[in-house]
Image (cartoon, rainbow over all chains, first blue to last red; front, side, top):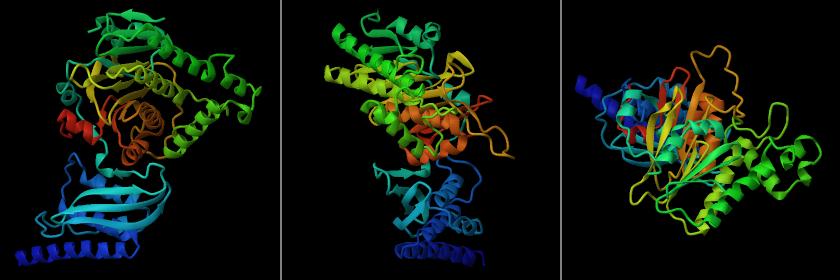
Amino acid sequence: MRTRAVALSILSSAAVLAVGWQLGEQGRVQDVASAASTSTQVSAPTATPTPSSTADSGTAASGTAAASGSSAAAATATPTPSTAAGVSGTFTGAVSSTRFGDVQVSITVADGTITDVTALKLTDKEQKSVSISNRAAPVLRQEVLAAQSAQVKSVSGATYTSDAYLTSLQSALDQAGL
Amino acid sequence: MGVQVGARVHVFDTMGTTVSIRFADDRPDPDVLGRVETTFASFDARFSLYREDSEISRIARGELSLPASSSSMRDTYAEALDWRRLTGDSFTPHRPDGVIDLSGLVKAKAVDAAAAVLEQAGEADWLMNAGGDILSRGDDRGEAWRAGIVDPLDRAALLADVALGVGRRALATSGTAERGEHIWRQRRPPGAQGSCAYRQVSVVARDIVTADVLATSILAGGPQQLDDALDRFDVEVLAVDESGELMASAGLRRAWGTSTP
């Protein structure tokens, strides 16, 4: 019974991806976004934040791909084990308008798991791809400090006046002149 | 002429702050350093609202109209408007009283121009710090240039350090701790939970203008602008909130080997 349920859910998640892709090909980017959100949840139904936070990915995918009803649909997806087999590749949606201009979203899927969501912005001069996988997350001061190197040659901080410079770390580094 | 510190560092005051340039090898000739200083001075002379005789002060007083201003003024203003659009209005070249204020862009533009002077002079390996904003070229005798980010809760301490290299040449920090920079925060939305303000924001980017503008815009725009900047630009960000807690982008977390709590 359990095996059958798992097999069914694997099938359905693969089907969602395939359908999402086909719909996307037909020019409806929101369906790709929906597939992205859905399978993000499917592949990693965990509440623990990871460096490429899956929760972030889901939210941003629907946000970036422009406001359709897709996030609501994603919220009802049923989580299944991350052993979902099969579907791999890059799936690109159609062009959609957002408040930043036209974007096109593509998702990268490896073995049924979304590994990246990229929005290609079409109206920017740069025409560059942006990824939502770089979102910020909390870090512990102690951990950051522990990773600190002694080889700092310059110090960045809020703009200081010439007077404040004299008592700054930067001034000390400059005086050391190493 | 500025101060010569050791054989490798050149320090001078300009634009109300202090610029330090550290060279991997000996300093270049005095005339090269002179041209660098002149570059900063010319930006200050045109764009400083602290100087009554600057072109931008004449515009502020209504003595000069923008269409009649220099092409340099109009180009910089146009660039600032581009950045306003790219940052969802969280970076703006207008003071609340309507005066055009390009100070959020001009220091970075001056650093950029000074970098061009050094490059034309054949200087390949240096680290320039203009009042807390950093631009690097090349490396430090084979090692990556490393820059620290100051702790806004303790100016004498560092929060973190970052390696500057290809695609990550610039590091800029905006904060509320020191000089009263012209940053106007967006009002907290009614009913918003918890703190949505940052005390200090550092951005690592390919170029100093992007780093500086985005640091300013995230400080002004808060968490929403932080997400937005990370989605839309190839940058890394370290933000410190009002209680001193840190938020870091994925690339920095990887570089520091930190987990997320």
